Image 1: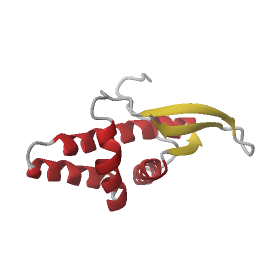
Image 2: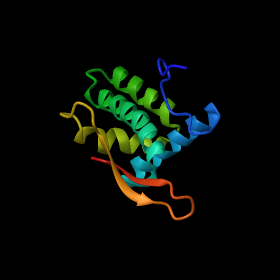
Image 3: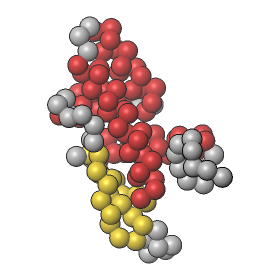
Image 4: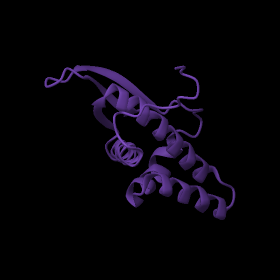
Length: 125
């Protein structure tokens, strides 16, 4: 089998569970600024977080109020958490207005004691 068109990691979960996991990780990242997780989860959550931050940036830089509302609602549909969307649009996104991607950082932080899984600190830059 080839690796072509295999887009993402499944992380041993069904699609609904995986989507909920990533959504919750990104909401926690927005609330706390830094979370501790495994490296594969962090790499997958990075994709989701970058897209959410980009949507929030578009909501901040929109010229018309209807556009801003549109992007805020798209962000809400991705995160399902009003407080996280509010913090993302009003606090976090304006700090990245001049940055073209790369809003998050993954730092390796050793191994978990129970199963020796590689652990990472996943944080906003």
